[in-house]
Length: 387
Image (cartoon, rainbow, N blue to C red; front, side, top):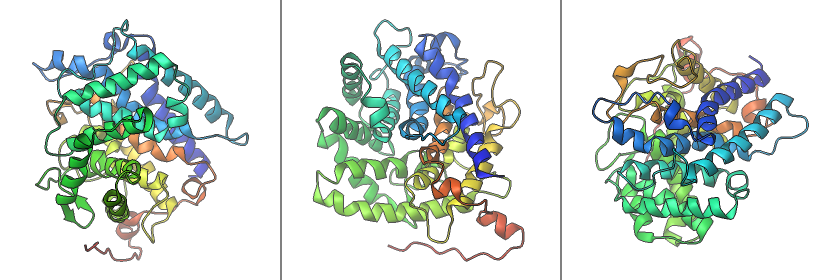
């Protein structure tokens, strides 16, 4: 498949995912339109967090592409799509921060808002020029107030510590304030919870799931990059964390089977291709493991995108994502999963933030590791990272 058509395929999938929620939020009609599909008994609590949940997750994946400066030589389709979605994203944000909106973002009632305040904060760190700089003073003030309000939630002793830290990173970047007691535990604890070979525990224990990719590694890298100027110890830790992140990217690449499937282990599988946010972020950062080409990462992630987003019944008749990993599979949902939360799948598209002439897009197609090995081709042996 030529890389130009691959980029178009990625863009078409991203547009299809983000357009319904952003359009509904901009009109103040998200809660009126979304088929929430919450677990029985949790409908009201999940409804209260749905607008921030879906906005934060859509923005987290969309942000790098919104930030990209497209050139005159780029496709007219992509230039037009980016212009439209920049405008739509800002309209959705402003409307959902307006106290008069039926979809007013809830940053403080219940624990869940801390999670999605952090995903929204992550988006702003990924796209400050296109998300923060165009905002009027009122919208900026409302957003800062929302991030501050999320401080009411005490994070759990697991990956949630990084949600508090990410909010503080955004407040430092955009409001010049910083609560070290909301930030430092995330760094200290995850250093304590490092298990070796590039993987962290989600809390003191290790769990077989994709939370190293959904949350831990992407957020840890980006909060440390903000914090390195504030503390010499944090600055010294950053290259160590980067080295682990490169190893974990190598592991993720090897998890992708020749058909784009991957092991169905752990919770939150209904985030679909969002399970590879970390690999996508390392591609965006152009910090891929030695011996693994950008072209093979592009092909591997494309296979995952197609496997998880092109199955029948992945979208309902109105264009909303359904709950599942490969089609509509509501049995995979935990009690916290709704139609809003599954939009974390957007984070697999982070590499759209790279220009079309970057190696990720310009290198020729290449088989990824499992494709090579299971086709009988020769491939290098895997090697662990030792502390």
